[in-house]
Amino acid sequence: MKAFLVAGSASGVGKTTVTLALLAALRERGLRVQPFKAGPDFLDPGHHQAVSGVASRTLDGWMIPADENRRIFWRAVRGRDVAVVEGMMGLFDGVAGDTEEGSSAALAKLLGIPVIFVLDAGGSVRSLGAVLRGFRDFDADVRIAGVIANRVGGARHVADVAAALAPLGIPFLGGLPWQPAATVPERHLGLVTADETAWSRDDVRRLAALARDHLDLGRLLDVTEVREPPPSPAEPTATAPSVRVAVARDAAFCFYYRDNLERLVGAGAELVEWSPLADEPLPAGTRLVYLGGGYPEVHTERLAANGVARRAVAEFARGGGSIYAECGGLMYLGEHLRTVDGRTFPMCGVLPLAVRMEPRLAALGWVEVRADLGEGRTLVARGHEFRHSTLETPVPSTLATAYEVRDARGDRSWREGYRVGRTLASYVHVHFASCPDFPARLLAGAAS
Image 1: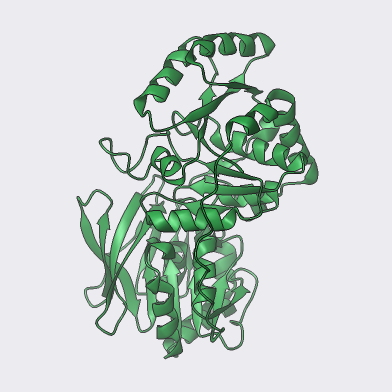
Image 2: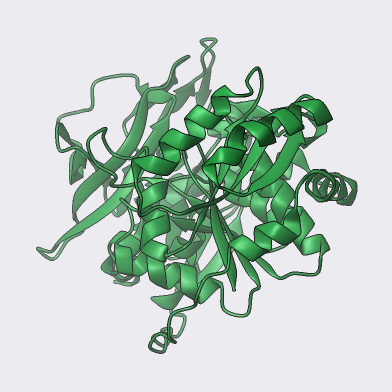
């Protein structure tokens, strides 16, 4: 089969644009594509799916164990022709400057797939050869199979870039001109969601034409051949559904790893979507509410106005119902949410916490949690934080915490994972692949 990881020298060089254009063009050729995103990202996968028509999967060399990354990748590519992995940051960027851990390069080596390297050609020509030479020689175990120049100025610019790169012996696959229609709008946490972008068929056709008209797709496929491993053992049989889980799913709450939802189903969950923006009562028979992250700060007025939904969540919690909340979900469960302009909106009041939006990034990075989920058992899981909000007031000393959180470098640790009754809320987005027992423990607590 064909498989490759789209990487670059840094964030912002055009990896997402190149990935989306390739997905659209390869699909247009009749190939069955399978997209992936490297690193803790909820937004890019949505755009992958909108363009390719296939659910994108998350891979992560720090957050997810090596065997689980391989399992997620090879299970998803069964029956597909081409696997396209969008990398994160620069090719060699990960946890720290002295290790490859967590980097796109380490992930490419783990999976045994080559790299298609994106160079930002804006304002540069011959210097691109120096950049590519450095990346080619930095780690001989990473195979850069081809290079694409982004933001080229025209045919003459492309020809000059090709001449500058020719001595390096890496196939030059072409250059993409900058086109506003091919860019995705951004906000404070990254790209605007795929639902808000509202990709049309014409948008996807334009993306496909961008790659078809400017890149050598035939050569791309020639240089990205990989050998599939032998079949893996059969997947474990899913547990019969026994716990109804209301998953908050709308424009305000949309940050979920697909693997997390599937692992909940595998552990015995029946997932039912519910919108805190538009719906009122919780679905009948709900035993666990899953409030993921998202953009509650963008929809504060609508969340506050839906008082029936807020009261339903509060009454569910007071009545002994189980709630699991991450980041945006924690913000929704607090007493109120204060926006950057100083306006205050009431939330559910399940947690004795008030949240304030900040104009600057408040936390970003991988973290590990030691979670006490009851019955004397401690689970170790990995995830990440990415937020622009903070707790407005000191946390009450009487508020229980279930997590000891440590950053990826091991430099800092703190208590978190706030507990009130059967509610567990945290700023950490946990990836369940890092701790397969996590979803089963959540469901067990809800079913008891």
